[in-house]
Image 1 (cartoon, rainbow, N blue to C red):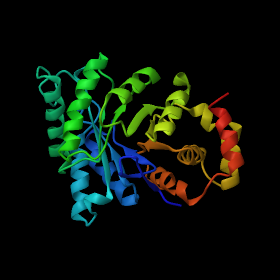
Image 2 (cartoon, rainbow, N blue to C red; image 1 turned 90 degrees about the vertical axis):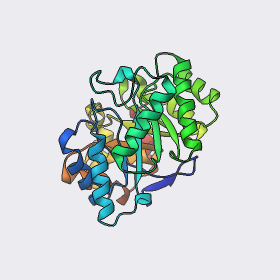
Image 3 (cartoon, one colour; image 1 turned 90 degrees about the horizontal axis):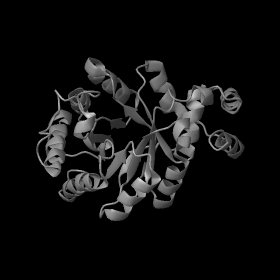
Amino acid sequence: MSAFFTSVAGVRMPKIIYGTAWKRADTERFVTLAIRHGFRGVDTACQPKHYNEAGVGAALAACAAGGLPREDLYVQTKFTPPGGQDPGRIPYDPKAPLPEQVGQSFAASLRNLQTSYVDCLLIHSPLPTSEQTLQAWRAIEAIVDAGAIRQAGISNCYSLAEFKELHRCVRIKPAVLQNRFHAETAYDRELRAFCRHEQIVYQSFWTLTANPQVLAHPTIVAAAAAHQREPAQILFRYLTQRGVVPLTGTRSDAHMREDLSIFDFELTVAQCAAADRIFTD
């Protein structure tokens, strides 16, 4: 069973991605370990408050020196608006016009990541107004046109109306939506349906941490017993079979191996249908 697929933008993407938030000085070590275990997708952001993007770049450089071609990796990063940055460590000029902020942030990402392009650039969250979000998106479109970004998306967008407006108004359509996956947003059921209809990749984060009740649900526990797997593996496998791309930020060597082994088995139609009810009841 393939662990990859091709997005509507023609980009080869892994079905599970390694997340790098909050790893600080350990970022290079954990990203290197994840890649060596077999992860081929890495998510980061040009946001020193929560990410060490240069540490990701050091890991990518080390893996490249070990013989892993850059084109074998899917690397995505984010433009984080000023409101999401540590005021003392903004990696661009916050007084510059918004398109210049996007360009400066992206240039910093290329330096940090030691690469000439990224596979996806996300807006880390919608800006205070829809016009500002559109301004940032148009700046990203220009970088896509220049060939330095292969596809674009947005994160932390939980309003279906807001996401539909962005999708309707832009020339280069969002290829990715990355959101927290939890009960408080009803697991983004309407947004995920829209993404399926428009062939947009929905990426989930906070997938395990926010859902202990799901991991303990009898349906998940029974499937774990049937497949001799852990509940986390069942949840990740279910999501991938439903077209969701989960992020995992585990620091555990064993959990990295377990997360990647979800493609060694497949849930039955009945097991997936039973799991569907967890997220719709």
